[in-house]
Image (spheres, one colour):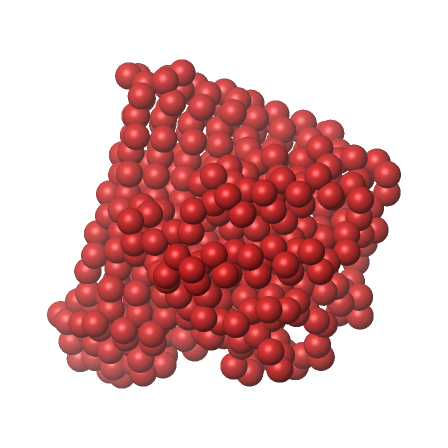
Length: 433
């Protein structure tokens, strides 16, 4: 992308921010985000965080307007079957008819009370390093509505919070900005499922999504983020988590690829004894591009991280995985492990994987590794010799590669939904053996 074109996109994004109306208590955040976005250097091939993920598709998309609520036709099996506090957004706009369930702990920004507004203002934008995460500053500039999940001290939400983001195409390429803020107070517990889907039409939108999670001392938060949109969408997403003393974050993410899809996770251990467990699966195919960047910041001592990502890349697709664990000088007694394994199902599939350890403490236990392999022909032959078709054998081996991550999911509705979806996915003929 040329410098002029990048500047044009940045200016257009600011113009769109100026076309919004928002609550006055969000003005300071929006102004700060606009200033940071305007001053930021646009990523190019020499920008390490974007080295393998070009942004030309975003600039060429012609995004000059905000998406609007549209009627949508979803397959009956597109969403999870579970009892939950359900909030549905279509192109970033709240759909009251499709939403159900209620709890005082869950509210939209636009419906927040004065007390909830104060909580939002105190926490929104505070977990994000906008210098490292460019599109987080854009999300701040575009901040208008979103979802607050606030769990008071020593309480537990009886039901999971299920936020569904539906994308539909419009006459002109349009933008949706989605925002979720989670504040889990001391000793509290909650569960959030974020589900990004689209209707069956070819998509032409750009989704900029940002989730911020603050977990206080002795609290626990379970989080699922599932991206199953149609492949022509552009999606840039970020999840930013801060962990205090003896808190726990358990996360799982799964994504299919698209024209451009980038998802960042940043977890910061601020208090001793904090634990983060993050597992992920990525499944690009056709000509898709999918990029996961994770960054674990160990600031405090006696904290632990367990991170496992698996990728299955097909056809001419490209995947990028960059996993960084940063151990600060005072983070003694850290235990951190990162594993990334990839399966290429065609000779033209590509993966750029880069696990990183950056350690400044001398009493830690850390490990990281990455592998790249192909479907084992001996195993394929064995399964087919036992009566399985080529498709069945391919499906079984593909499931075997990621099944350890799926089987351990505590939320049965997520586990069953993904099993059914992936069974159909793996049976398709694009998995070339």
